[in-house]
Amino acid sequence: MKFSPNNEPALPALLGRRQFLARTAGLAGSAALWSALGTRTWAATASAASDAPEMPNIKIGIIALTDCSPFVIAQEKGFFKKYGINATITKGANWAAIRDALSNGDNQATHMLIGMPIASSMGLLGSPKKPMIAPWMVNRNGQAITLKSEWKGRVGADPKALKPFVESAKKLGEPLAFAMTFPPGTHAMWMRYYLAAGGINPDKDISLITIPPPQMIANMKVGKMDGFCVGEPWNARAIADNIGFTSVTTQDIWKDHPEKVCAFTAEFAEKNPKTVKAILKGLHDASVWLDDAANRPEQCDIVSKPNYINCQKEIILGRLLGKLDYGDGRVVTDPNPMHFSKRNCNFPQAKFATWWLTQFRRWGMVTGAPDYAGVAKQVMRSDIYEEAMKEIGYAHGGADTSKETLFDGITFDPTGDLEAYAKAFAVNSLKG
Image (cartoon, rainbow, N blue to C red; front, side, top):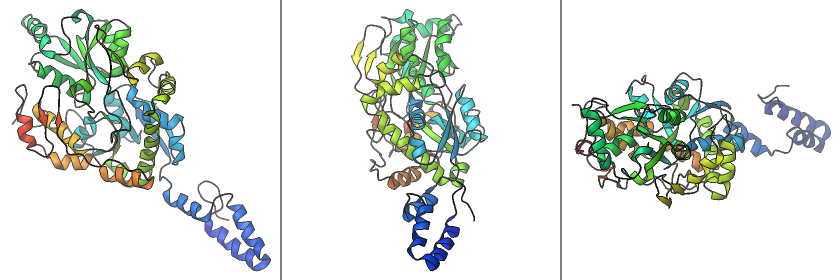
């Protein structure tokens, strides 16, 4: 008798047995077949075979940030298993390591900054050219810009207040240092946008350095930088450790901004479409679970563990619940904390990739106008997302081409002249 990969009798062999038994023992033959199939119906058995992931054993990379939660919860709560995925979650030391592990096949899926699959697909900023796709947006909101404690009461939410300190340090030949987590990533763009809104050129007026998220606190403690942009819980941790305060959250800069994605190499997705869709389905269930506020204490119990974020759960929980203490006397209820599913969070919007490309252009990371629409279509694979959600009967909000206005009052129109938008910023490092 032939067997299937899960060591159960293969269907052709069972059918032959059914025909034999039916001829020799009437109804006993049917009983033997359905006993062999267990409690599954014929239709369910055929469907399971056709829908099974091509590669069920998957390694998924994460970085120690609160927004790794959908991957962790999908694993810990059995949502990946529900769709046939046996996941191993691996924590990377930094974003370059995460990128490289995906590129070389050590990981098959990964938690990634939205700018990274764009940069890798284009071969920008030191990224080896490797086409990648992002068929899933992981989260919105939930990052912040932290400044050193000595600026409390002197710099609040307006980056213009930083400019005198920047100019003074520059004149002394000792430029201030600000950290982000990866050059093409979200934290780099938020830091650049914030500084530029204050009249500060991040390429000329300060030193912009790269520090992995979990190392921000240690580096601030020893005075290596004057401010940083990173995801939670490290901004809240800086306040708890009394080494810094929050100037602005990233949702203060741009409500419901894009943040992390689930990324795959284009090659892997092409060869394993059912596996990719199964992962997205597990992430969907996890994300819906996460956006029930009643589940957030349990979320923090799970993700705070050393093999995930390695931070006290109380520090992670506060900002997830919208309890926002900026650390300089401002205490508010945040109307837009990090979320994972609601407000059409997960649809891989092409407009977000085009905005990223305008910023690559603005800061001289590309020379000349990039192929805005072409790259966005290549990376932000809404077709895969839509197919996966259709298979589980989830009605999403679809593509969004609405305008976005950031905290400096400048409006981004994804249907407008993207090149003109990129060139319109007074503070820039344009090339070509």
